Length: 188
Image (cartoon, rainbow, N blue to C red; front, side, top):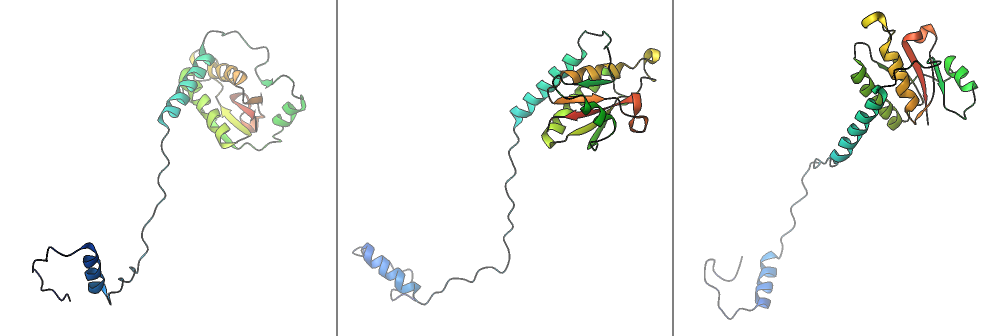
């Protein structure tokens, strides 16, 4: 305890040194409290959401979808396969024979042309982000569309030909979807 009575006014002649000495005297023999016997919860802070980047990516996907849908309804010479110029043709043979494992797939059944193109562009962007090499896109044979025409088949394959990350695609064997699907080889 203090030598001075509690509540008694201090003399005005006390200096800072006296206060420090008084504090030391009061704290003599005092020990720190033991640490609590528990673990403090800690979580790493959440990563910030890059909202502008998300908006930019959505705008790019919308633009790519429009590119795949605008005009140019002409028939492709051979829409069952595509190979980026400069690549060896044996890639097509390997792709058709399932040389690469199909790592993911996208089913577009029941979608109209525009939503299907947007979904395809988003799927390819996600595959690129995840580093996938070989994927399958199931577009159907067009049996449920007007005139039983394969609208999605042409649109999706034209969209694939315009994408930089697509190296090649083929119409797979019947066990992997046949004419109602396409197996796509992407850049690594």
